[in-house]
Length: 184
Image 1 (spheres, rainbow, N blue to C red):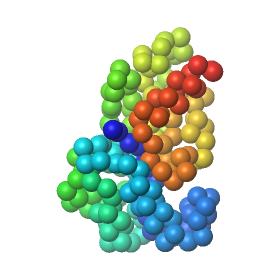
Image 2 (image 1 turned 180 degrees about the vertical axis):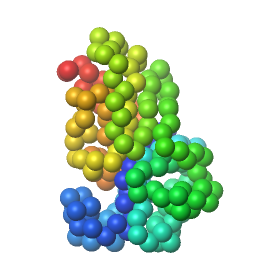
Image 3 (image 1 turned 45 degrees about the horizontal axis):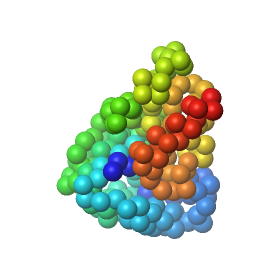
């Protein structure tokens, strides 16, 4: 299985991050995110795309949380808070297979461009089937609306804020896209 999420913001002790997610403290948010990842059903053969902004402030504590993630293959796309120091720390994690600013994923005939920032992938191909389009999977905005940028291009938000602080499977994303395109 393939999972997506972004914007953990471990240790980002700002109320505008954790309060809209339903938490009273940063510690409560950190623990809930880790618990949700551990309870998501992620298996050692699975791949998890983390689309940026994994931690802030205390890198040591942030790395402690990252080391507790469930065993899987992880692809980390860097976000605006992922400094070169944090990139080096991420590279030290034994389960990280990829680190970069964006990556492509082809899955069951669907084409995805995975980035931290929303990216316009629209090519005036409204009349083409979903499998002939490239869909941007992203985070960054901390929106609760996974479709907030759909009118700008084929953009689907995977950040925790849009998915009840949990990762989402690629198959669920595809189901969401099919429903969106069928009603568009």
